[in-house]
Length: 129
Image: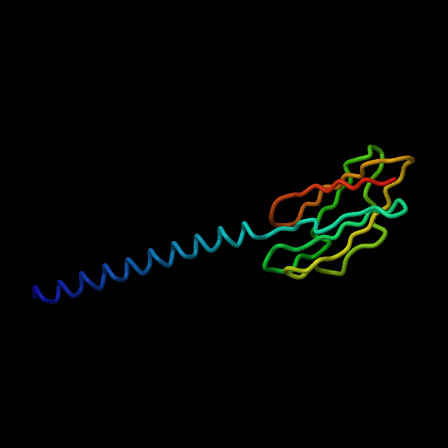
């Protein structure tokens, strides 16, 4: 009887250890996956009043471009109206080009806030002349 209870106790300790290790793995992998999701501006330029933003997907899954909120915050009175936008999705690690007209006279800074479905919002400032 004493030998069996030692074996059962060892098996229970082993199962508890494996369960805790599995739970820790699931928790940590979820945090790192969440932190690597998002977008960045790979490049930006202005050409003849047209703002070009090259958007890169930093995540591990495709992002539907309709899920990325793009708001023009400056100059005041102007609003983002995409003349050309991206494909239906930005695949993981890939880039897509977003274009918009930044109206006005003289030199002006056109500021855009991009918010992906997962991850942090980013801001892009493009100077047009």
